[in-house]
Image (cartoon, rainbow, N blue to C red):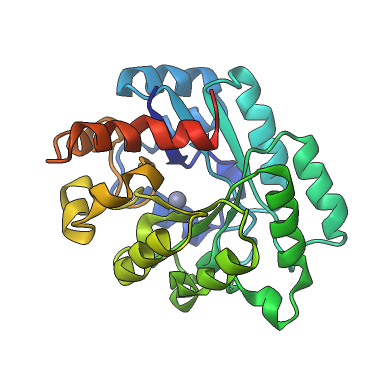
Length: 280
Ligand SMILES: [Zn+2]
């Protein structure tokens, strides 16, 4: 059972023009991506062709930088109805774009969202801003913790116009891991490419912090994380397709499989860790 924990299937019509331009750059087959975002059936077929059994569909609220509103939650909840066993919905909330955070959290739970994404460089906030008065963040983390819903944080840089990269440093998640010890925290992209050491430290330091390797070209993965096998039990395979720089899911999977990792580690990263987080 292979899970890609990081695929962007999202409402394309919400993109701001500059963000859409960044998505389309160097991509000849954007029409195919548009089709997948419209049609879960077409995308499930593509997953079959790539050898992916389950996909976590990443959505988040980032009106300023990308254009995504809270409408992404209804979008992804509706999309996964085509096959709830294979399609796992990830939604989001934004502390500055909510009138009633409690009601919005409840709505998210009602929609059946199975992961929450926080994207600091696109949401323009630090993950530990609850320490400086952003109470909404604390409410989101508490609700996720209480309901066993993991929170994925983008860590590392972003090349989208308007993204602010100071927010991408994973060190601010050290506070979150300490203050919310039962919250499952997923570090998307392992701090790529500036903060891999910080990410590796956090995964080893905190029992509740996990690594999502998406967005790191598999061929360079072991250069960035030479001791990856030591944290295999907390590492998840993901591609970040169709993010800029991720041409193809299948090639990503093939390249990952070709890495000189112990078999048990490879299996754990492709399958085992995701099954503990989202049981089949
Ligand atoms: Zn992503």
